[in-house]
Image (cartoon, rainbow, N blue to C red; front, side):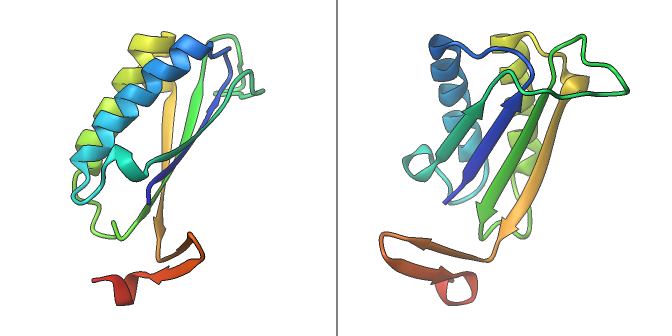
Length: 120
C-alpha cells in the first residue's frame, strides 16, 4: 500500500486537494503493481516550512512510502508527475518540491501482517 504525506507551506483548498488526489492517483500507476485503489493520502497545509533560510514562497515536502518498491521502478516518472501536480495546482515551483522516499518492508492492514519477503 502506498502512503503519501504532503506538507505544504500554503493553504490547500478542498478543490485543490481533490485535484492533487487525482494527480497522485495517476502518478502512482507509474510504479509497477501500484494503483489508486490502495493509495492512502494525508494533506497538511499551512506548515511552517523554510528553504534556504526563507519562507516567502510556497514549499512542498512529500513523504512517499511504498511497499515492495525497493528497486524504485517508475519512481522517476512518479517524481515528475507529483512535481508537476504541485506546480499546476498550487503554483509551487519545481525547485521547491522535495520528495522523500521510504521503502516499506512490512505492513499491517485489515488485521493482517504483510511482510515483503512472504509477499512475492
